[in-house]
Image (cartoon, rainbow, N blue to C red; front, side, top):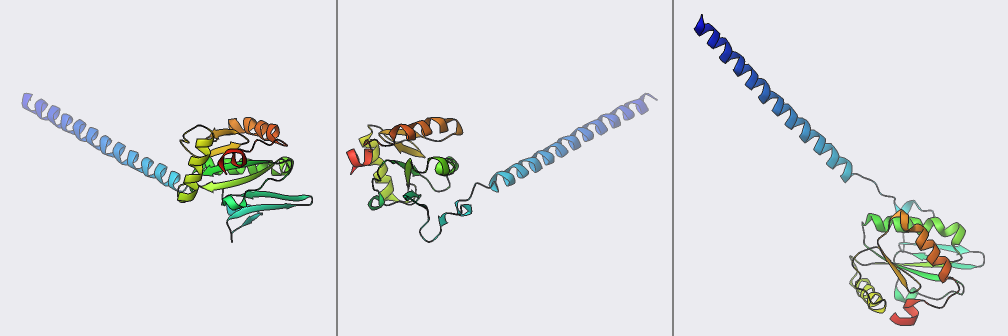
Length: 193
């Protein structure tokens, strides 16, 4: 009888250990599944696509708006030869990187300003991660502004600069656009060129 109790106790311990092992295996499998789902969702996260913009021209990778009273320049792939002063407008220079989600947010923000404030600014974009000439231009802007640019987007309005973009900075950027309108303090023309 004592032996039977011992066998039953050992059997119960074995069942408990086996049950704990099964629980650990099931937990590990569930954790792996959850991680795979998260990785899949992050990898397939869709960012706003520039080609959805009705003003996008895929032939030269730019967005350009024509207005009744002139022109608004809004291009992601500018060349220094494209830069010009248009009376009453401030130039915005945005140095960005292909695939950078904060850069995309910045472009979307400036695009959202176009209807109400399009006659306040022109936007020149310079992709720096894949274009060494643009990376050198960014260095020149940094030198003119007495800063070592440390990331993208690097946004220059007038003689001021902003590193990065989060929606909370949009009021600051709009204020800078308004303050620099009709002023002659374009860092490119005054110090870089």
